[in-house]
Image 1 (cartoon, helix red, strand yellow):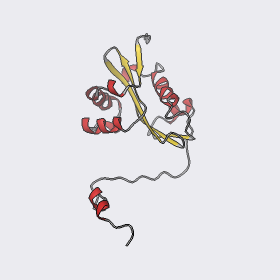
Image 2 (cartoon, helix red, strand yellow):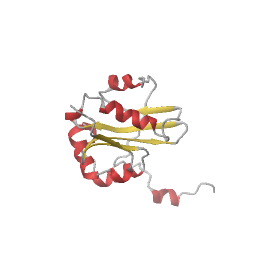
Image 3 (cartoon, helix red, strand yellow):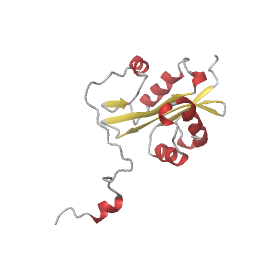
Image 4 (cartoon, helix red, strand yellow):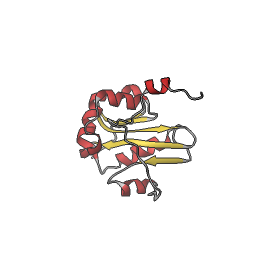
Length: 155
């Protein structure tokens, strides 16, 4: 397949949320239920956001969050199924890693369920340390913003 016409972009304003939602539904089992509002929030709080385009069709996406010095995390790496195996996923991740908000941090994290070998080929290493997750679902113990404003720090 000739990929000379494939274009990579790191411009937030180019993200087509409806196309992104569709791409995630067909290419990312872990993100099939993402809403347009949720995607908009995730995109606006991420830098970089890298998209891959074949003409006007979104065929790839990845984003990162970073403090710019110590830690960054790469999220939502996806390439449309029919474009996989041609090196676009590798280039997508490398583009995120080369971004100024990511390239100078001490550690870059990435969470994957089945693609460990793919990411190891790019330079990631499996981490044997304990990973902890806090799920902020419909928990009775969830703290709201109003709870925080009503709390007194010092009495």
